Length: 224
Length: 258
Figure 1 (tube, each protein chain N blue to C red):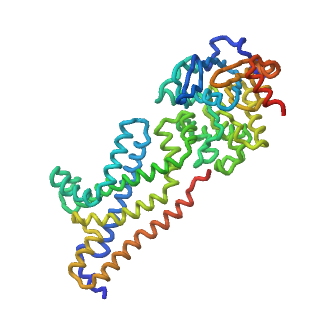
Figure 2: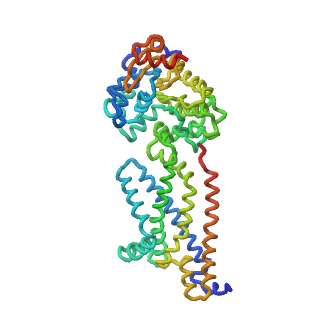
Figure 3: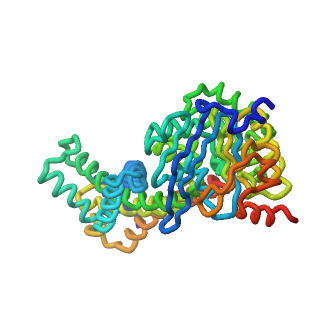
């Protein structure tokens, strides 16, 4: 029943899911960093930065991911010549997909972290400022560490969504799970089985993530 | 007991540490601080009392610019209070603040709370910072709680840690914004004792409080505020036994007769 799987070697089933993992991993780290910076901008005392953060989030989160991903390839790469340091198409598109995923997911990470910042009592930042910490020190040492701990749950949601959103990278030819699934469905008769295999693969990736982060969120909760 | 008997008149002008001149502040239509003039000498303990909403907490918070002012000037150690930025952070490091709600950093242990400012603001060596922190925790009587988190301590213990945290910066002046108002009655004294000790050691202190006993025993001067104005300033004995203004008489009659 499963023998058709071995007919596929570019990518293999495992290789395709490995690509999904790589996309999730790098986009996850990138969007966490960029999202945190955006959140810092949105609470900063500098109006220009606040304005930029707000505009970025409100524009980017309202554009479909497919549009963003396709724009990275057809727009950034083909029209503006952004090759992300590689002339090899596969590497270029892989990196462009990560760029698009980071740009998109960071908007959601930013809002999750900002809601976390709002859970930190004002007195914490006041006490930090009163002892002479600068705005960025207050954010780094006092506010963000507490904010992160309170939004591990919502961030897990974003990470799970990101894992599944990596399938959009198939639209610009990145050979990840959904790309292989489409190929298999075109060639094989067992569409139901193929669907089940890929659905199962994604559950295997996301379920432990959710459980682990749920546990971590309880463990790291700040007691007041 | 070296500085306790120093009164306003006996201190030369050069000893003025905190000077507020014609300070005004509004919250919307509410004029919370009206032409405040107040001078606090080095080593002086000034207790600010008054009914709720009289502006005493706001006054305390303007001294390290947690509240901005609309007009007037505030000088600390001869220098005007800078605007937001590095200069202000440097000044705040020299002004210790103790809050009504303690505001200990919830995600850090007691020891880390007392070390943080030394490490990040004073750039102290980690070992020296820890030694100093443990010494201060011992001084306020919570040395055994050093590795616990704030939420595991009683209110009185938390407030004493907060005092240690402020002292770790070697402040020139300490501001206390109703430090015992959020405490259970049996914990008030342990905090007041620490503050009395500080006063005896010659620390310059501005204390907003409802603890008249503390005002009587530790203050060099009592400042009575009402409706955003300083109504009366006097040494404690005179203020409590023979207040000048009707407003102060009325206030004292309400709080001292039960």
